Image (cartoon, rainbow, N blue to C red):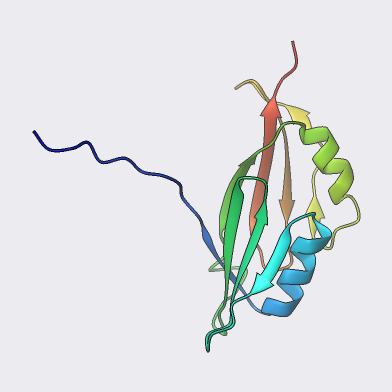
Amino acid sequence: MAEEITFKRVVPIVPVKDLDAALARYRMLGFTAQAWEGPQRYGFVDRGDVSIHLTEWDEHDPARTASSVYLYVSDADAVHAEWAGAEGRLSPPRDTPWGLREFTYVDPDGTLHRVGSPLRS
């Protein structure tokens, strides 16, 4: 009998126009951020158990090649308050029919970040 294969984690790779600006923006959002020291313009951002990789791509066009990620957090309202003032578009938190308190943030590279936490009973 073959051993069961398990998946350990997933890390989205998000295209950006300017890696340095994107790393600075994620730092402002509370992530640790660092550029890869190799020849490609590539970066890593982490916060808790969440990791996102960034790849600088000259052909990235936020209107055509943007990405989206969903971030499950412990308190969407607290994260929303932290992210207030971030460059981009930030929607107000709302309760969803699927049982989450949720908001969206679209950064200047066009990446849609949906952020949600379980509704409190």
